[in-house]
Length: 147
Image 1 (cartoon, rainbow, N blue to C red):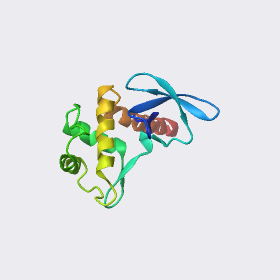
Image 2: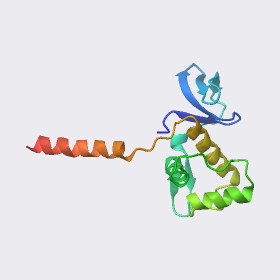
Image 3: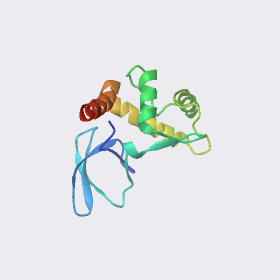
Image 4: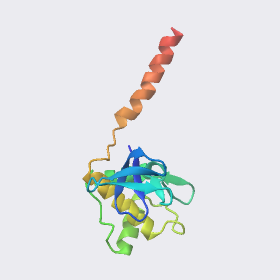
């Protein structure tokens, strides 16, 4: 679901990769559709590779988005421009055991901002049936091969 969605430090919003150049990649903003080069000197992060620290492990961003999606019934969440105390309190409801020493309010703001952008552009789709079907298909294939 988050495959190909990028965040580039120093640039607001989320981007998708369009093509690759010699010393850069060409990205397109989800917000305004403008294309621009992103160079190797920019910190480029794929949302699918980001996780949030908890007391025991790391939780992938997709899991956090699913938690927010369920809490908000598929609607936008609180604004990333809310008061820091409100953001901390909200984040505790979606990820109660986040590591309070390593997860900063600025990280929480990014997560909330990204979630709202993904909802705005209909990029968050949680469909549990599609996740189960490949496993069922593999089981059927194994049974067929044994017969």
